[in-house]
Length: 417
Image 1 (tube, rainbow, N blue to C red):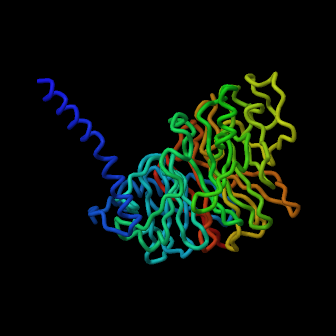
Image 2: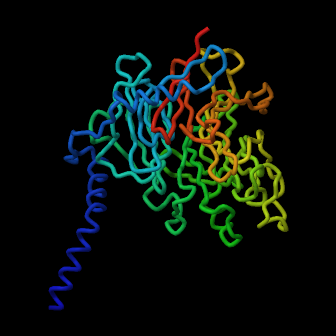
Image 3: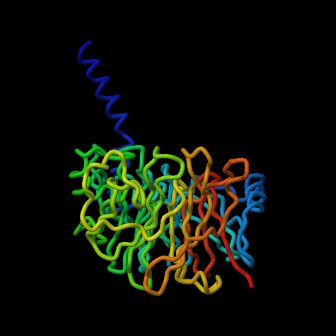
């Protein structure tokens, strides 16, 4: 009887582990350019019908400056961060769930024809961070793994894709620090051809005993590494939870948003847009909760010397997320070289705020001007969200894509004189 029970336990354990074994086997096959046998029956998203029609109707409420218009580009469930392929063939959209979506506008009428699951032979975990290198490598920063997919724009038609592991599962952060909170990564490939990744820390304000570990691995900061995962280093510290960054093409400075401490009141502390001009800078958290507002937990502790204050402070709890520099020519001259950023909207403010797209000019000296609201209306007068912007990304024609994870959509903002 004992042997039977032990045998049953062994079989059950094997069955429970089988998805992981299958996933490991798939990854080995893909790294060796082998087929996995994954079905060609892709998960696709309908781009027509009542749901899409209602999203278009909702967009009638969005207010933009004169000459601009917004339209539904694609229905994309749980749409988060956007990576537009350098060849203009396809757009990749991360989520906080398990899917990466690939969006294709085949007839180039500026409306997506197809949205389907990308790389179904790979099991992703919170693949929020998607970014491209100039030479066409797609990087996906998951909760605790980083993958590189060469020529993703040309492999996406197959369930099997070329892939290499940049950071192994469980090596991006210590597994003991994995959390449901602040776990959405973003990535960018810098002008130095290194891969930059933001690593939020899981606490509202971390306890002092966590600071050494987080400082060492780069949690509550930004790390960078060679594109093959070697040469990892901590680039910036003192960052609570950044979910948006981009390099200024004019001078190579790294700008990033940061979400600040909750529970201090409706109007403090402010959200942030920061500028890093070199490696090793500290941006103040957890000594500062946002801007120059000190946290209660660290008010009696001396902040690091040389702490960098934000370039821009935003409305408290508006949740500033994705951002991009505008380098196109479609929009009027005032927007060129400036920053578009998405405010996801507050969750714990008694009077909701945010759910809009902001514009921040950047001066000739490389510093920020005054931010202004660019697109609003996803938060109604009654305090109801009809959308929550997450990311912005400039398209090759100079228009702007905006993702919305509440409505599950990408919107395209264009300009006509």
